[in-house]
Length: 164
Image (cartoon, rainbow, N blue to C red; front, top):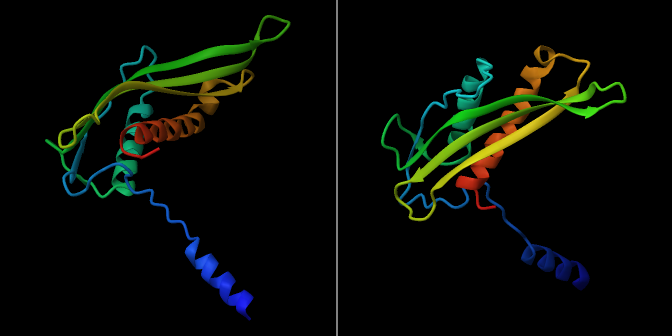
């Protein structure tokens, strides 16, 4: 009986709590966010990419922080552009043809926190996925873009407001 009581007390004392809600933001001072559209300025343009990226970026910050979106002059401002959409042959076979192809998307992001010093970010983020070269980019790009955009949003969120 004492062993059970001891075990219950021990387990209660060993609890761990995690929070994934905007890790390094001080919500007492930072309350609003402005996210500008990201124009696609890549040499090769896939028209649906910009809208898919914009929607995913907004959703992440709105769903995972307590920031209120505003159209201008937010406490935090995020802006940038899509700078790369590259399709490249990889893994050349013995017949000199590529057996794999890689799609890489690059985004430049400028994150400005007007309320907290030394937290601004201005950098490029890239992510890529490979696919079988026997398939055309038209067949796979919609699915690949969803995966790549998710990874880019993770990178951007982690570099700006998550405490990782």
